[in-house]
Amino acid sequence: MKQRPNVLAGALTPIWLLFMIIPVYVVTIGSFATPQSFRQGGPLSWPAVLTLDNYQTILTGKFPGYMLNTLVIALLTVGLNLLLALPATYAVVRGRSNGTRRIFRVILLGLAIPSQTVLIPLFWIIRSLGLYDSIWAIVLPQAAFGVPMTVLIVSSGMRSIVNELYDAMIVDGASVTQRFFRLALPLSKSPIATVSIFHFLGAWNSFLFPLIFTHSPGTTVMTVGLYNFIGAYDVDYTALFAAVILSATPLLLMYLFARRWLLAGLMGMSGR
Image (cartoon, rainbow, N blue to C red; front, side, top):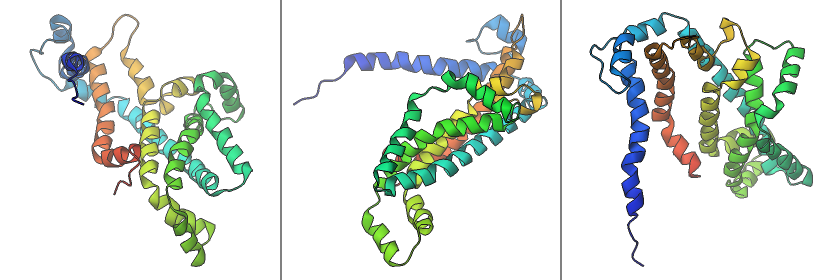
């Protein structure tokens, strides 16, 4: 059958591109404008004078420390999540008892529990453990809430490993630990990379947990630090735009270097 062209989709594509490009244009150009020219010309006008003063203000202030806190929290979140989820995934995939299947179902129930619904008991637990206003107050909940998704995605990759490979390693005398590290993890690197990037992005852009579980400048993260540019009666838009550009640059670089693994993991490919 002859496929008909989708005229409506083609006509709406330029409109969709405008909705995507205009915010990027406003943030990028506004970060190089002075506050006076931005207010006078409006967000869409080209600034009369291009300046780097906004970036200098951001880099000489507290924002680099906020970005460092965010980077540390994101790396710890990803590392702890993989440390907890990968052995559990291997046990679920290789287990043959009904107990492992029940455990797998219980783990997947975590996907149906929004983090916002448990903020009050979680806050009480963190205060009771003496972790309030520390980076672990952010890392532990984020890593725990990411375990169900990691188990779900990585288990599909581990299940694609044929049993003959495991049998060959058993014949060679490989232990369970050796089969896990030398076979299961190397052949599941694409889904592992996918969930690692996903959880890194989630931790990098996290706002709710840092806002509630921390308050001192030493533990302030980037998303909460952006509020410093919003005053009671005015907003420093140009400095805020520069901070947004700086906060988005590491994510863009990470995507450029890791897009092969991310796309391969999403499509169920090996990523080699």
